[in-house]
Length: 204
Image (cartoon, rainbow, N blue to C red):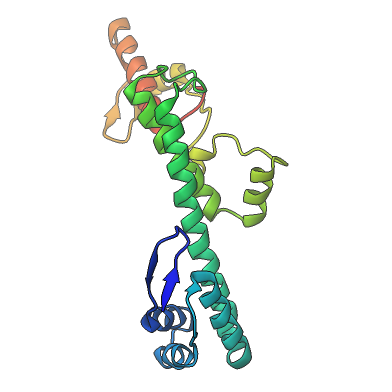
C-alpha cells in the first residue's frame, strides 16, 4: 500500500509515522502505539486521509489528545505552506528587479539578497504573531508596516546627534567622549549614523 504525499510523491505506508506523530501530540508513547495499531487501510491513501482517520480515532478515545494532534497537524501545514510560498517568492525576486525599497540599489546582488531575507522573515513573523492579526494582514484588512523587521529592532528612530556629541555616547562597543574639534565631531556623527543604519531600519 502506498501513501500519496502533498507534493505528489508516493511512498510505502509506514505505521511508525502515525505512532511518532500521535506520540508527539499526546506526549505518551503508549497512546501513540495504541492508535497506530488501530489504523489500517485496504487501499492506497493520501496523507490527509491518514490524518483524518487518526483524528477520528483520537476523538473517540482521547478527545484531549485529539485537540493536541489537530494543532500539531495545523502547525505542520503552516510550515509546509510557508516553505512553498517562500520558494515561489524567492523565484519571483530572482527574476525581477527590486524597486520597492528606496534604500536598496535596484537590481544589485546585495539588493536581491536583502529582499530574499526579508521575504523569509515576513513569513516567519506572520506565522508566529497573533493569528487574528496575521489573518487580517493577509486579507488586506490591516497592513503591518515593515513586517520583515517585526520584533527585531526599532523603526524610524531619531538620533539626537547634537546632544550625543555634547554629552558623549555608547555605541554598544565602547563609550565615546565629547569631541573637541569639528573634524572629530563630523567623524563621530558619521559613526552615529552608520551604527543606526546597521542596527535599525526605516527613516532616521
